[in-house]
Length: 309
Image 1 (cartoon, rainbow, N blue to C red):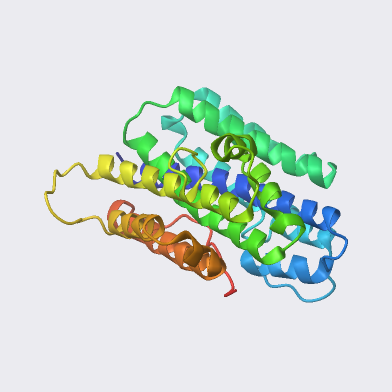
Image 2: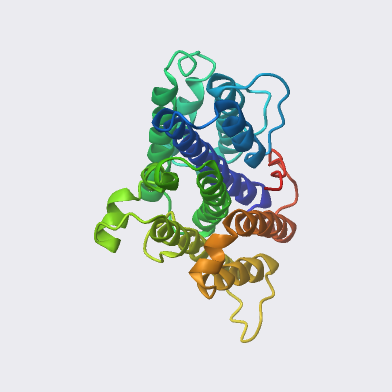
């Protein structure tokens, strides 16, 4: 596969997932502000911006936070910017995409310059982003052959999912709120019903954190996404190597997964924000390793380094 096409598919996966989970994180934040009147709005919003790698001077409330993380096209981390970037990546790989997938990405993008997204209420706008991301992912799943292009797209999606779920967990752990906000975080990931079935109705914060971190069967858990990324890299490599790993990205992601799975849960929860920051750095290093091995250029929007917790 051409390096240009592989890179474009990798970044389509990343950008669509980034827009989706940014909307999910904002949904968690807005619900926490509504549910707990004791939460200080400006401090809470500032904390979230720091986790997302955004610096901001001046007054800050949930409206300004929405502007910075959803509507501001000049911000590299906003939903609008990532949808624009996904459409540009799709344009570069147009000859390999199905008509349905190109149409889904292009239709999503066209809602931005038309002003449709800005006229929506905050909750409606976030819901729309999540629905469009689901449409794009569903069409990709049903129209792409399981070849190298598919593996690059899913690899990008999985690495971004690990990074963004780590940010969601950090936001929930630090923001506080009713029952530490874990039921809201589960709902934001579409995990609430699966969690209740798995834990038979138990809603303890540690159990929710364990589910989003370590569950091997739920696709949005960090361990599940790491495993999927490893499988994609194994398919792309296909060397039959009997010892060690020649692929640096596969080594990094495999080590991160093993470190999570073999840690005592209590120790992991006690230092969750720090552990999630390390995991984000691992994702960044793995993405760099993928780019160095397979891609000739770097078309990505820089994902601003998150602030230390």
